[in-house]
Image (cartoon, rainbow, N blue to C red; front, side, top):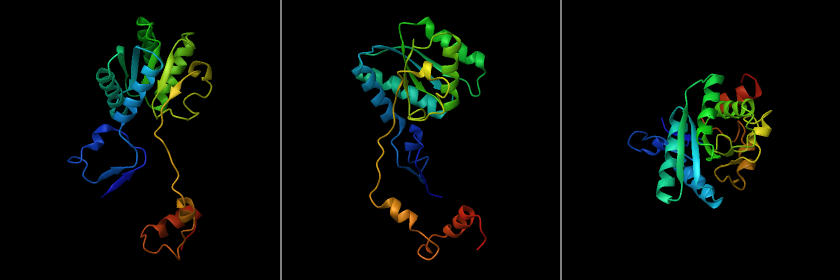
Length: 201
């Protein structure tokens, strides 16, 4: 079954041999990592750390950042830390302790899911280190409020990355004009209509 994803950025999905029927409308994390390296270099930061959620998204993204930083040169990675799946508060605290072992590396690149971003920021607050770290967040943070709600002090000054988004002229008008009468070729539209309008046809 062919799949088209609007948000899957894991680099391994670019392997056409393994994922023959997969397409996406966003670039893989390797491009995001390159942008983050360019950003860090433009800000004049040369000593940074990475924190990643365990799993394909976090680990692949952080690895891509480290690779891109080596290729670009001029960056030293103080340490690359990984959060386990479903970490406890003590594990977030341990990450903050580890980051403080190389406290001169104030810039921290986060390739993490929303829960882990919140956990790291909360641990920063508990350690009374709000304002110490200069966070560079991946697209999982982006412009979302949820990862920082109630933790704004710890997140203050963070820079996050998002792929460029653009509206296709006329798409919204076309999409919202679809009805049962003019969209018969879509076999699933009937089912969508019933679910969306909570009715039985």
